[in-house]
Image 1: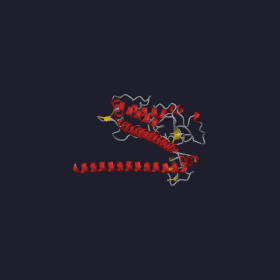
Image 2: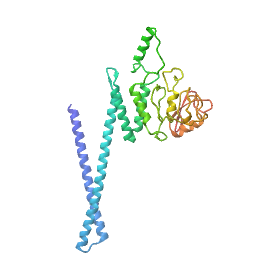
Image 3: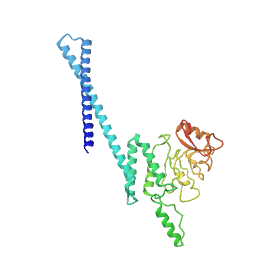
Image 4: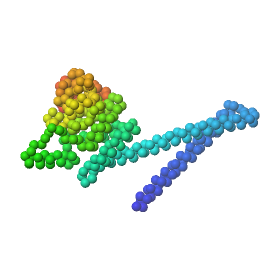
Length: 322
C-alpha cells in the first residue's frame, strides 16, 4: 500500500511541476512577444509627440486584447471538444456493457436492445466511431445468429428441447414459419436498415454478415451494397439464411455476395455477366478482383480462370493477393 501511495504522490508532483513549467513558459513567451511587438511598432511609427506615443500604446493594447480573445475562444472550443469526446467514450463503454448483459445465464433483451440503440445514436453523432460501431454490431450478429452456434450459445437450447418433446409425443414440428429472430438481432438489423451511409458512400468497408440466420429480419430499404451474405444452408434448410423476398425489399449491387441459390433482384440493375446466376459465392469475375484490390479487402473464391496462390479461398488485399 505504501509503495502505491508513493507512486501516486510522485505522479501528482510530476503533473503539478509539469503544469507549472508550462504556464511559466507560456507567460514568458507572451511577455517576449509583447516587448518585441512594442519595439517593432515604436520603430515603425517613430512617435515624436506624447499623443502619438499614447496612440501607439493603445494600438498595442488592442492587438493584445484581440489576440487574447481569439485564444480564449480557441481554448473554450477545445475544452468543449475534449468534454464531448469524453462523454462519447463514457456512453460507448456503457452501451458495450449493456450489449453483453446477462443475468443467471439468460440474455436481458431489454437492456441489450437499449445498448444497441445507444450505439446507433453515437454512430450518428460521431463520424470517428461510426464504422467501429457497425463492425461491433455485425460481429454481434455473426456470433449470436450464426448458422453454426457454438456450444453454450444462448437461444438454441429451447428450440432443441421443443423439437425433442414434439418428437416424443409423435407430433411433427410445423415448419411453415421460420423461428422469430431474438429482439437484439432484429434491433441490430433495424439499425443497419436505417443507416444512410453504405459501402462506397461514406463506409470504407462492406458489411460482413456471412453464415448468419437473417430469415425473418426486416430489411426493407436496407443498403446491402458489397455486403457479404454468403450462406451455404439457405438452399437446404428453410429455417436459415436470407430469402428472395428480403432481397427484393433491399438495395444491393453486383458486388453483394449472395447464397448460391439466390440471384440479385431486377431492381438492383445487375447484369448476368456481372453476377452469375446461382454461383455468386463460388465464381467471381476478374472485374470483381480488380474492384477488391482498389476498394478494400475482400474474400474471393479461387477459380481456374483467375490467378490465385492455390485452390480454396483467396484473400484479396489492396496491395495484392495474400
